[in-house]
Amino acid sequence: MVDNPHNANSLPHHVAVIMDGNGRWARQRGEDRVYGHAHGVESVRAIVREAGELGVEYLTLYAFSTENWSRPQAEINALMELLVDSLAGEVQELVKKGVRLRSTGAIDSLPESCREALKDVEDQTAGCTGITLILALSYSGRWELTEAVRSIVRSGTPAEDIDEQTLRDHMNLPDVPDPELLIRTSGEQRLSNFLLWQLAYSELHFTSVMWPDFREDHFRAAIHEFRGRERRFGRTGEQLTQNADDASNH
Image (cartoon, rainbow, N blue to C red; front, side, top):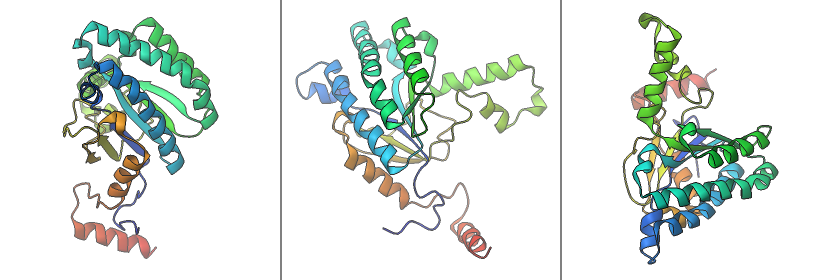
């Protein structure tokens, strides 16, 4: 295909994913929700691998929200155990593939076993130079914004000196670029309190495919759709055309 000339970043540097539908997928099969989460791990493997091979630099997965703490305790316990087992089981493969693991969210609220497993994998993959995989754990966009404001207040920054860059500098991962593309599975079409600041100008891709069934071809379809879109950032089509013409003349 021919890339859209108005899309300067034809391949997104950063893709964020809301991995939705695990519970419904499991119920359709007469199983409990944890069964769906367990099968969703294979989708994570497939998408991390595909994103890395395509050249995506950052992949952020919404793994556990602050709202998820309200779920039944048995499900939470099973999810935390699944997280620990998955991290321990994947670390060697991540290192082999050059995948660096990072995390965002209220990590201190996770059980100690999860924090230790997460830190261990982050430490072991810190030197990897391929794709960066970011797990959003005990995360919400409103929580992150609230924490950023608190951090600014504690720093003593005068109100008149606060601008967008100030807020960005106090977010969880200020060195990570905003996602150009958000993918949400299972047919739901909302942000669910995910990366509210960072997704301001992201392209949104919604698919009815539930997360445990989401594979490489679905990910490539989302990338294909992204590459055909015109990203305006509030500008008119005429302005984009003029900017493209000016760039080609230099």
